[in-house]
Image 1 (cartoon, rainbow, N blue to C red):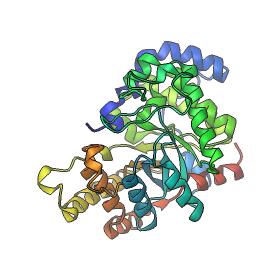
Image 2 (cartoon, one colour):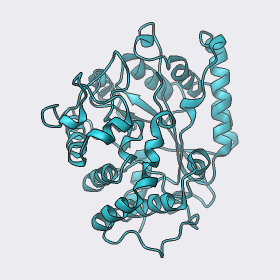
Image 3 (cartoon, rainbow, N blue to C red):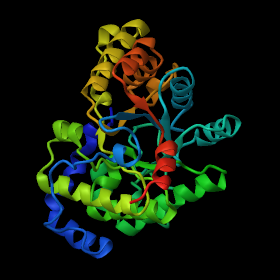
Image 4 (cartoon, rainbow, N blue to C red):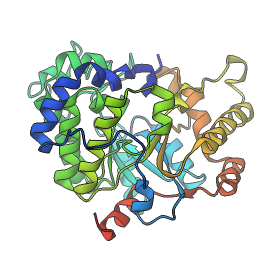
Length: 355
C-alpha cells in the first residue's frame, strides 16, 4: 500500500466542493481576503523575484519528506543531503525514529529541517498515535488507537480544533527537544484537505513566524498535475498573499510527482537500474521548472531488509535517494542554471525585503 499526495489526495481538491464554506471561514479569518479584485492570472513577479533573486531565476528546494518515520528514512535523508543534492527535509514528530534524527541534527548543525505535520498513520503494521493524546483528541484515532489510515478518514472524523491541538503538540515536542523547525509542511496533504484544517495550518505558521508550504504563485506544475479550477487557484493565491504580508516566504510552485514514478519489478533489486530510471525522471522534472521558487518533494530511504515490513514503497524511496546522489542529476541542475536553496535561506531573505 503506497501513500503519496497523488495517491491519497483528491482531498487536496476537497476545496473544490467546499468553496462556499472556505470563503466564509477565510473571510472571517483573513478579513475580506476573498475579493473579485484579486486576479486569478499568473502574478507579474514571482515570489523568487520578491525575495531578491534575479528576474527569471529558477530557484529550487529539493525536499525530503518522512524523516523520523524509520531508521531507513533517517539514513536515506542523511545520504541525500550530505552525499547528494537534496537541500531540505521535514520530520514526522509522532514517529519512533525522531529522537535519533534530532540528535544527529544537533551534532550536525545547519541541516534545513521542518515539521512534516502528521495526522495519518497509513501503514498496516507500523503505526503511531497523536502526541496530543487519544483521550484529548479522539477524532484523530481509529479503533487501534493510531492515527487514521487515510486523509478522508481524518476529514470524516476529526474536528478543526482537534487538528489544531495536534499540530501544536507536534511543534511543542520539537521545541522541547531543542529542534526549531525551518518550516511547516503537511504529510499526505491532510492540512490542505478542508478549509478549516488549512486555516489552522496557516495560523500556526503566522503565529510562530515559521514558513508554511503552500504553492501560491503561478503554480504551473500543480495546474498540470492536478488540474485545479480557477477558483481554487484564486484561493491558494490569496492565502499565499496573507502569508507573504505576514512576513513569510511563499512558494511559486510545487513539484509533487516523484512518488508516482513506480519501479518495475524487473529492476527493483538492481540499484544501478533504479538510479538510472529515477535520475532520468528527476532531470525531466528539473527541465520542467519555470521561473520562481519551487519545492520538489521526494522520499529518500536507505532501505534495509526491515523496510518491506513497513511498506512496499521501498524501491521508489530508495530510487529517490540514489538519484539525489547521482552526479548526473547535479550536472543537470547546474546546466539548467537552477539555484538550489533551503527554507532557512528563503526565510532569511524574506526578512530583508519590503512587502
